[in-house]
Image: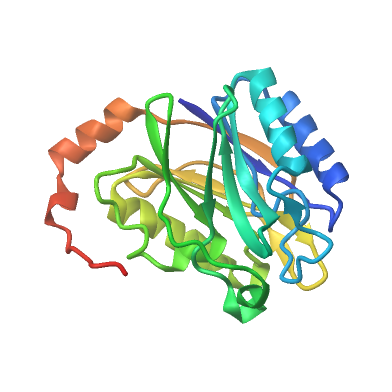
Length: 253
């Protein structure tokens, strides 16, 4: 399994421009099984989504379906969605056959006011694709380890983010922790550039179950990086060192 992480500078509230940038990045870097884009990759991270969020059948999702089919690969990333009178920060995972799986961000960023306009999800979502099970997570979810505790149901966590410069050390540290404690691969894709409130530097990475970086993107640079996910190596490690068998159990409500 080959994964491509796409670190991009998102144009504020301009889906057409951002989809074009994503399309060029994918077309210029063929050969991956999965292409992973940042949080709200079509608009930038918005806490006031009126006039910015798209419908559940909007332009970003339609582009993801078309492009996934064209390249025979999955495309994933989050989009601000307006559905049935509510707004969701929705992480889409679109397979080349048109199958759509989505996760609505559970932990809304109250410090930035995301909770005032968006409705949180309440379902943990794992999607299987080409022999790898992916747990879908969005940005602030990274700070809540109980929510993502590995129950033996996934092999890799995908984090898409708009994580600003002042807290970037927490981003890098927590990604490593999630990989180590859950004995899994982790991909964290963060944007670069600026929006009306924040500055972003990227620090996008793929980490192996030992807590080692496989690949990373250079800071403040639009970049696509490839990583190989080795399921034989992962399964061998879990069998040799079955730490998850000794983990505490949690009752989630």
